[in-house]
Length: 111
Length: 114
Image 1 (cartoon, rainbow over the protein chains, first blue to last red):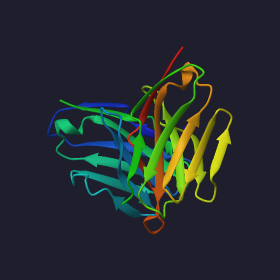
Image 2 (cartoon, rainbow over the protein chains, first blue to last red):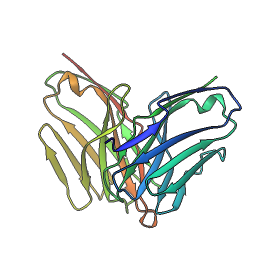
Image 3 (cartoon, each protein chain N blue to C red):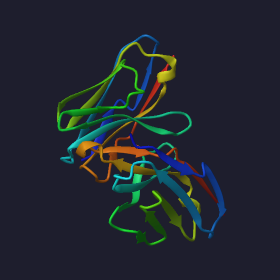
Image 4 (tube, chains in turn blue, red):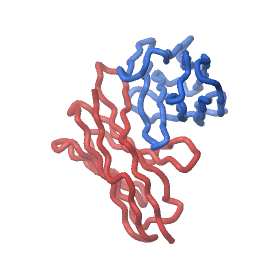
């Protein structure tokens, strides 16, 4: 009965490939997020998705695209992977102005 | 958008000492301020939060204070223990026309020595 689950936990891929990370929450939350945590541990927001409205961090390259088939899912698709995309990606969910629950993280390594 | 600054980036204390981490935010309309603890290799987890209608909140050894006028809030940990060692993040939830956009500070690595 994991609250926020994301898969895969580890992802190793070559430069130029396209990959997806899946995220699901069973908390009934109305907001979902994707964060990137780099080697310096900085949690940088990439996307916030609330009731089909997408808030994009303008610094995120358009190779990254979130896809939400329904309120419980927010997947992250990445095109043309680059070395600099290597990081831990966290999915999270919350009620508006409430506690955010994080998934276990996906460690992406681009070689 | 919202900008959250957090200091210090690293904090080393002896077991039993107090630790204080400070954050400032830029958007005066932000009204929700959580603190997260992230242990090595694990996900961030909420340890305490405060809303803008409250000035201080306490939960056992941890407390958070909020100064809306100055736009800063602080985490206080008393009687620190080695298991308190982790990275701590402050965050602010900006108003953004009603949507949640939880913005984090850059984190503070707290090291508690026995």
